[in-house]
Each structure stands twice: as C-alpha cells, then as structure tokens.
Image 1 (tube, rainbow, N blue to C red):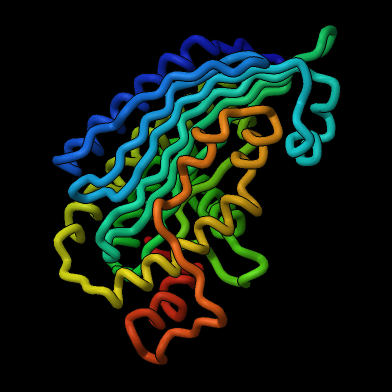
Image 2 (image 1 turned 90 degrees about the vertical axis):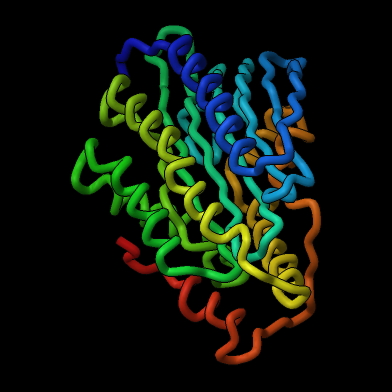
Length: 303
C-alpha cells in the first residue's frame, strides 16, 4: 500500500504518551514512582521500560516503550501474515499493565503500536494496532459502562461502526479457549489497521492511546478505598492466574517479543507479582465471586 509513512512522528508521539501516562499514574498512586530502565537490542533498536512497585494503590505496574527492527520476521508474525516472509521489519509501541492492591480495583492493560515490513522493489506493508481491556475481580456495572463509553467516544470520530467492530474483536481476542471464558469485560482491540490511510490510522491510534487514562483513572479513584479482606485477596490472586495464562499462551505481543529476541524482563513485566492456582476451584453459588462469572465474564453491550 502506497503511503507517506512518518515514523519519526509516530515515535515522538509514543514517547510522549509514555511520559503522560506515567505522570498520571504516579499522581493517582501518590506514593510510588516509575523506575526507568533503558535498554538496547543487539539485533537492532531498544526501548525504555518503566516499572513501579509497592505503591499506595498499585502493587505493580509497567509502562514500556520499545522500538525494534530486524532483517527477518519472527515465526509468530509470518504465521499471522505469510506475506511478511522475507521482509525486514520495524516495530514500535507503548504497552502497559497495572496491577492494583485492592481487589475492587480492576487490573488494566493497554497498548498502541505501529509495524512496518519492507522488501526491496515492493511497497512497504504497514499497520497500526492496539487497544485496552479491563480485568475486574469484583465487577461494578458503572465502571464497565464508563470504561466502554470512553472507548466508544475515542472511536466515534472515525466511523459509526468502529467501536462495535473493535469491541467484538476485543471480546474474541481476550478469550481463554482452554478455560472457555473471557479474561475480563473487554474494551477495544484492533490490529492490521491501514484502511483509513496513514494519517487517519495514526490519528485513531492517538485517540485510543490518549483515552486510556480517561477510561481507567476514574475507576481507580472510585474503588481504591473499598474495604476488603483475606477472602477478596485470595480470589484476586486466583483470578490473576488467568492473566498469566493468557499472556504466556495466546498474547501476540508476548510471542512476537520473545521470538524476535526482545528483552525478556521488559516483555514479562506485565505479569503480576503474586498469583496462585487452585485445583478445580468453583465459587460459592450466588456469592460475589460467583457474580464475576455469571454477570461480568459474559460479553454484553455496556454502552
């Protein structure tokens, strides 16, 4: 696809987005600060990883920027897009995960990214991708409605059908096939986006990236002081296991990063600090834990 691709503008935006999100999350936490770790990739490129731990609100969180390039595509990418075989690549993005202390504050994940593959004598193949999703342990209808309404507001300027398409894609993507259940209450997921043209596709990625804190931080503020005890903590740790399972088994970004020789510490910073698995667990019927499965882990129209 012919297009004027301004990778410098994309990189500038992504670095600024990382700065902005980190500043807003630090302000929301009020105690912890992100520690930065800049790194270089031997095969080409590098990034800066920012991680916070043991905050007042967040038990662990990470906001990563990476910009990597290489002479050949990893297997995970060519399996998804066979036409990329034999091409060099350039990929950059911001990816983040926040794991809160309080079980009533959901875990959240977001990323925005750009990818370009080149081959001499052929047009570049490029696209944008990203989105964000919410993983509650004890759900709240108003939180879900706010999350999805903010996502819809970010999508609406780009087409009447964009939110519905990318909401469904999110529901389908963040699904644990071996558990036969969604990871959370969804949000947005998009990949291979180039049909809007470069300028509008880039603008859409910015709209999604800029709306993440608007979607998440009001939920954090509303739930961070909710009283909880050992029962809620143990359920939170159990449900975090689903997050680990998805990231290590299905997540495209994790697979691409590991197979392309990315920095393992940065790739796996998304995993929670504590987690537990329990054999053949079933929540007590009609309990708050049961409601997560029966009411929230069921794709629905929240807007």
